Image (cartoon, rainbow, N blue to C red):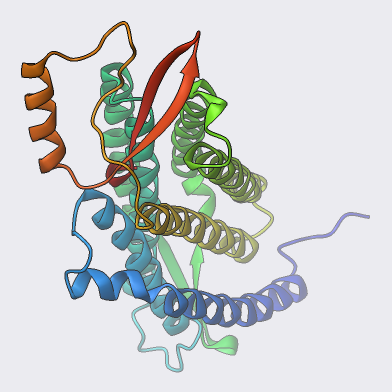
Amino acid sequence: MGVDWNDPEVLSKSRRALILFAHAVVGLYTWEFIVTLDYDIALIRRKRKLNAGAVLYLFPRYSTAFAGIVLLRMCNAMTEDVNCRLWNHLLHVSGYVSNTFTSGLLYARVCALSGWNRCLIWGLGLAYITAWAVAIEGMLQSDAIYIQDYFLCQPIELYKHRMNLSYLFAFDLVCLICMMVCLLRMHRGTGGGIWMMLMQQGVVYFFSICSAYLFVVTCVIINRNDVLSLIAVIIAGLITTISATRMQHGLVDFAAQGTAITCGVFTSASLPTRAQHRVRSQRVQRSTIFLSLPTQMDGEGSLEVVNLEAI
């Protein structure tokens, strides 16, 4: 005999699990937030440059922190006077903002690893703009009810978000595949350097975000009940945010160790002229962090460059 997931007893257990789970998740992310606070402090003290990569790093980080505060408020609504719909809108806005900026962080890495390929930039750029439209639509269709027995503001009708979540998952999946293809096309003669680090991060991030999104999309599509769907959404949001921000944090720390600076890909068959060298040197002075990867191709020396600032 199958389980009736909307049975009052099952819903009661699900709501208790949600409240306990929400407090545990907020505690976990608070610990994650504190142990990685050094990067934020460096930005405030201007030891690190506030660029596009830093903005894409900070938005999902603080949006998730705000979502955690809102979630705690919804799980501790002690009176019926609490405006559950307002708090639920705040939860969905912060959640979608976090997910969309996380996608932007991934999009920026694809652009950098592809050598700023125009087809990828424009194609994924249009898809990213659409992702924002999808996210805004998801923010507007959220609703919640007050459960007096548990002092809980419970979001309802989460199945309406399945198309929104599916699109964001598809966009991130395409970005991850493009990133992996770009990494595989890099020369592997660099040993355990930047290529290996990026490859390892790419694999970890690929499986983390795919597992999280598959889990939440499956739960929302199956729609056992709204409480279980919300738990799945919380898990996915936490995993994707931590994965993306730690990826960026690790990459910046790797770059800060100090490496050679260059600004092009040269081979013995295409060495720059003196005028070109002056122009490229000026570009180097205006840039911040580049990594040079010495490799060997067909007996010719070559230099492969990754712009770490933009990844």
